Length: 227
Ligand code: 5RP
Image 1 (cartoon, helix red, strand yellow):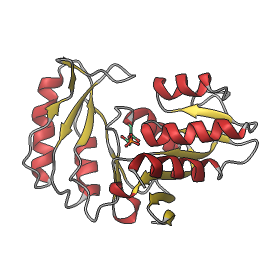
Image 2 (cartoon, helix red, strand yellow):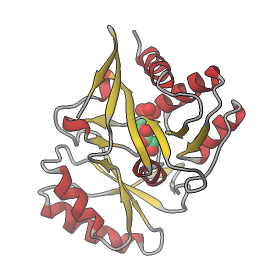
Image 3 (cartoon, protein in one colour):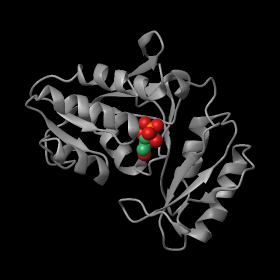
Image 4 (cartoon, rainbow, N blue to C red):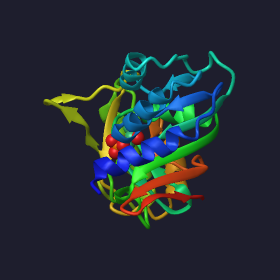
């Protein structure tokens, strides 16, 4: 089974968790796209809260009613992909650049389910680059402070400004993103706290203690994991 087929399979399994009347957080990325498609196909009476402009556009095209974060009652369930799924369902997210809106929606949700193909599961976080969203104003200055925070956590790699076609990528919120090839993140909670302490860092891609469940696609079908 290809990674694409695994994504479709977990997308469908995740859509089956949604019940009529729910407010549902809609993730971002290629796996979340499969979930949104499968959810739309069920034609349930639900309200979606998108985590990016891209997901909002797809959901609207597929006929899912949308609301903005804060305009509905609590979000019942959020379903989203991840770049890495580590021990205790600790995650790296943000390759798609939607980490800030994703984290806001996840934190406002009663329950969060992460979905991915088997390649996303790791024993230690850090092989995949860690995105750090930074205010555009003075971002080159902020990076020096980020390097100090990384060094406190025994990470010596330099953050790299994310670019597309030569230009810095801007998030939906107008910020820039730096990616860090940490290799290994020995203590994710320590790093998360250190990065949060840097003025100008808007958010980072470490999602810790947020996922309640994971649905992982694999050659033998969908496997469920708990923290
Ligand atoms: C976007 C994300 C995505 O969920 C993450 O990058 C996984 O994407 P994909 O399902 O395409 O591998 O965090 O900001």
